[in-house]
Image (tube, rainbow, N blue to C red):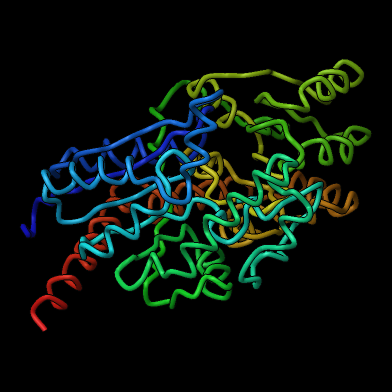
Length: 398
């Protein structure tokens, strides 16, 4: 293995609709390719009959596994990095990599390996009953995946099967995005020791300087993201709509009609901008007083928050999960209880009363440069690859 240039094979399955995991995979593959020999293998979940067959093969997809292993053996990588296997590839690939003793690591972008919900959120509240269960019966009875008993069972069975036959032992390593996520996995029924977990955040590119950065920030808040229940945006709107605060909203999703109606009722306070491209989003971030992230579920590693820090934009966020870890009150933003109207109002009022918001803005940019820039994250990722490969060499020599 060369100390300077690695051979890296990356596996990723795309969902039917693009999400954050897809963006992370593409960003990392592109950056790694600048200095290393990278080969990627991608598939995509289908709809209709083809999608149904893919889902049926989920527990033991021999065809997909053979195809990927053949390409891996042809490429002879130093390490294999897996992002998403759900559901067109499946967990048999990990079992086969272990049998062949090929160094590999799996990024845990969500909690599907522990619960069919993948998000630990169901019907308006956090759902953590599966974490200690060998088989997630609680998730099954509540039909946490698409409100379907059969779909929930098939996902639960898939992970239960591979946990019981120890498919990810003894060579599989995992990347958790935060300390918070790592602790959930280590203290669950997964059965993997902490020594096989690495922590590595996602990264975003810093936006190019533009004229908006020369303009003084306004006093309005900004929300960027999916307009859905787990994001807590309706709760936040209803908490501040009768206050003096102004909120701009960018995004689309199931709550779009409700938010549009509220915006018409409160045209000077709730301003719905709809879907916007990345350049427009960064412009709005540069003009707002702070980004708000009122999520009522456990976020993974929200790229929007990293983009806010990259543009020097403070964040007011929920005191749940990783947001509590990523946002430092008084240093990069403020925290609030997303289920409590008074807590939301208090945080918004407190923020506008602060007389050192410019300092907090500089702290956010500093935090980005130290923790979430491409250079920092790529160095961490290469170190992970090298450590995994070295462990493999040591085992072979012993």
